[in-house]
Every structure is written in structure tokens, then in C-alpha cells.
Length: 490
Image (tube, rainbow, N blue to C red):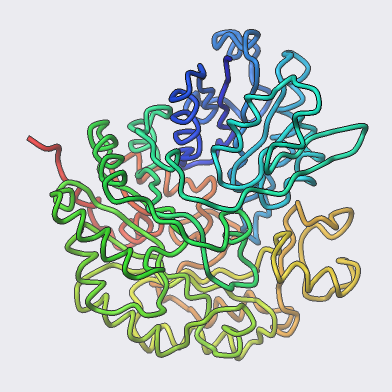
């Protein structure tokens, strides 16, 4: 069998397609030939892909096209940029020129697999985060009556979209990858970092978040020996700065400490730098110190808010005391941090906006992302509540594409009407000239908090900056030199 893996994500700065590395490893280990069509790496425009590109890849000899859908949109209120129309055009082009079926997968696809397969006009899809289910599908392609045996499969039959229950999440051997399907060295230089998983799944109760939907509600940790080998493979390719794609690195906390200890004991802490997402729940100075010793260069805390009522409305378990303790712990060990606020949710008012901004100043958070507008994704508790309230267009708390979008595939944002029509000016006035705050803006600039097509970020990375995008923006704003990146092992 001959399979073509396709990365259609062409956002800038570029983000390496982690899923294709895992899938490529799983295919090759079973004797399945695969090539990669990385449309981002190839520098192709968002318009139709030239026929010559596919011919160079011998696409007419391909038995199946595997296309990863990482995101549905940029989840940014001011741009509301959907990636679905470009994906549909790409699939239409493939199906008109080649015989092999187009198979969808990825985190974005797994949010609403039946609806997305239908919208994008693909042939098949695998929902969930198990490479093994994709292998089962490839093994039975073309066999009549075999599809009902494939967990997580979405397919067309008699003009209808059908689906099978997903496999329960599990830790499998394909969770490990030698990272040789994707040109990670190119992504490191063009995108400033490369993604890495230390675990999958999320036990969080956030009412707006799709992570438990697409990755499962149970956490499976990667064996430490496999994690270290994977990092070694990437270091040997010239990659030295990573971003951990875990939902929250310190949940569970014993895993976070074990990862740090393994990096220190293996000597990798002196050869790499890494950034991560983390929860303020249970975070303390012991963990902060261990992370810094292990090579961590910055932490993004998805705190969302400081007001207890707003935190409850968003399904968050931490409270303001946790935020104060977290900020102090990181300050003591010298770890750069970002507190990510998610404003405008259910019950947000002008006064709760003020409380969130004032609180971050009070505890002296060094960097705050003040995003406003909560993307309402299908499959989440927030989406169920919104849909139960009636037509989207009649809901005063919703902004975005409200007509013909009942499945919420295109951007719809919850923006509490209780903030009033002047909330944008009010938020800007609350922040004032405080450069610690990254604000949502329509225009591009040094404090623009939209990473998609961010010219400031692209330029900074081209000039040598490395690391998490928020930290690159911090360094640009403060006229700091690029992050000191460890050299290769001698």
C-alpha cells in the first residue's frame, strides 16, 4: 500500500504537524509506504495547489490520501478566520484528479467528525487520538462490509454519513515517534520551536474546551524512556527549543516532576529549552524550581479569570489564591510566565473585566494575554447550553456566523452582552499603556495577540528569536535579545 500524508495547515508562523510524525512512524513500522505532502513546508499559496506539485509526488500511484485537520479556525474574535473553505477546495481538487479515497483525521476533525466529513466532502475519517484505528481502516480498504468493524470510523453510505463508536483512549506503542516524517529542523528555524507530547488526555472540566472531546478524559502518560529517545532524535536533527502540547503539563503533578527529573538526569536539561501549558491548581515553588532546572524557559497558565463567579461559569477549579501563589512561585525562581485571560464568557460585566485586569496588576504578573470572546465549539458543555437557548441569531450573547451554522463549524463567539456595546474601549482603557498586556486587536502590531498570520512574529523568528510565540512577542516588546538556545552536544 502507498499512502500520502498531507499537511494543509499554512498559517504563519508555521507549526509542525505533530500528528503526521506519529502516523508516519506507525505506517512504516507495518511496512506501509508513505510520502508527505507538507503544503506549508513547500511554501504553496492558500489557493489551488498546482498540478505539478502532486505529479512530483507520484500522487496518481497513491492508494489513500490522509489529511490532518489540526484546527477549524484561528479561534480569534477579531479575525474569525475559518480554515474549512480552503480544506474543502483542496479535497475537491484531490478527488477530481486522483482515485484514492481522502481520509480525514486530527484534533480539529475529531471535534465534530460527522459534520466536518460532510462539509469537506471527504470519503472517510477516523475520529479520536488512536493511530491504531487508522491502521485498521487501511487494512480493510476496499473490502465490502468491513467498515462497521473499524472503531472511530466516519464514512458515507447510501447518501448518509455513518459513524462507529470511538475506541477508548489507551497508551499504545504508536504514541512514540522517531520524528522523521516531518522536516522538524525546517519548522524549528521557520517557526521558532517544535511540538512535543509527554501525555494525552485531559481531566479538566472547562465548559468551552474541546481537549477532553478529542483527546479523551483520561490521562495517559508517555513512558519516560520513550520521551527521552524522542527528544534525542529531535536534538540530533538540530532542534533545541520545544513546546509541550500537553493540555496542562502539571496534571497530574507527579508526572510533571518525573519528566523534569528524567531531563535533568539524562543531561538533556542543558541541551534544550522548552515551554508549556500548565494549571495554577496545586502549582508551587518546588515544581517551578524543578521545571526551571530541567530547561523550562516559560509557562503559559490558562487562568481565564480571577473572579470566582466567572471561574465557576467557565468550569475552572482554581481560584484567585491559586493565581497569586503561582505568580509568586515563578517569580522566585525567575521563570517567565503568561497568564492567559479568557474574557467575555457567561456573566461577564464591565466590573468583572476590571477585576481581572486589576488583579493581574496587583499580583504583578509579568505578561498577560487579555483575549475576549469565547469560541463556542461543538461537543462542549457551552455549546449544548447555547443551542438549548434557541436560534443562534436571537441570542444576544453570540457573535460571528449565526446563520446556517447550527453545527457551529464556523466561528461563533460567546461575548456577554452584559459588558455593554463599548466593551472593547472599556477593556483598552483598563489596560491603558501597560505593555504587560497583550490585547485582542484588529490590526497587526507588537501587542497583537493573534498568532495567525502575525507579521511581527514571523519577522522576529526570521531574525533568530525562538520559543513560545507569547515569549517572542514579550522579547520584541521589551527589546530583548533572542532566547539563549543551547548548542549541540560535543
